[in-house]
Image (cartoon, rainbow, N blue to C red):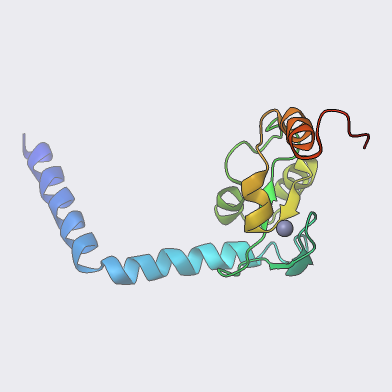
Length: 138
Ligand SMILES: [Zn+2]
């Protein structure tokens, strides 16, 4: 009984702390996320070009970020959004191996939006037929 009351009280304290310090806590978790992501620079280039349109894209840049693309139909070891996966794990040798095994493409926001993960080749072939007509030789 007492134990329950204490833990309830503790929970309330925690909630109050979180409510009163939300901004500071958000800043802290953002800072942690940035520190983790920074550990990947070098494994992931800071600047590169979209592999489709060649526009400049930048790791950890809000305006023209790199979109890591599941180019293998989502059969990669990392199934979750790659940037989220990165932001939760430091670049340790084990994590680097997992990351490299996925062979993610690097795209800009625009190109990433146009490419479905599932049935990509079928989609592109249909889009080519639609654009060029059934008899076009590619
Ligand atoms: Zn692009």
